Image 1 (cartoon, rainbow, N blue to C red):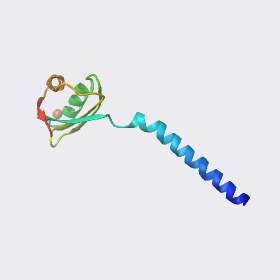
Image 2: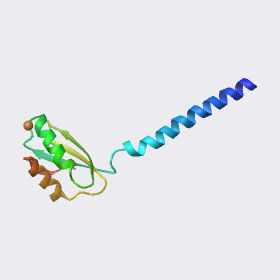
Image 3: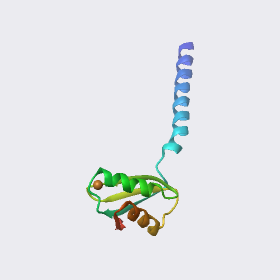
Image 4: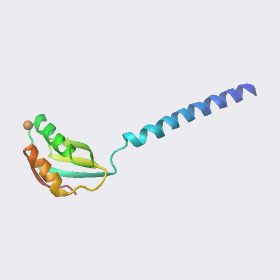
Length: 103
Ligand SMILES: [Cu+2]
């Protein structure tokens, strides 16, 4: 019986440790609450991707920028809705053109 008790205690401790770690790390690493896909034309290489990522990433509220070079799709994660004009201005600033928003 004492063996069972030890096992149970170990299992509980392990579970508690895992859950505590997960619940602490999850919110910080979690994706932004809002995620929208913008279409950008003119990007041809990694440098273009870096430029767009930097400019759009500098917008207020933006948490993440994920550029898919081949399709020109730019997924922007943000804390709140972004103004299309603001994103367009950032893309223009980077030297490219924001052609629209993906559905
Ligand atoms: Cu380039």
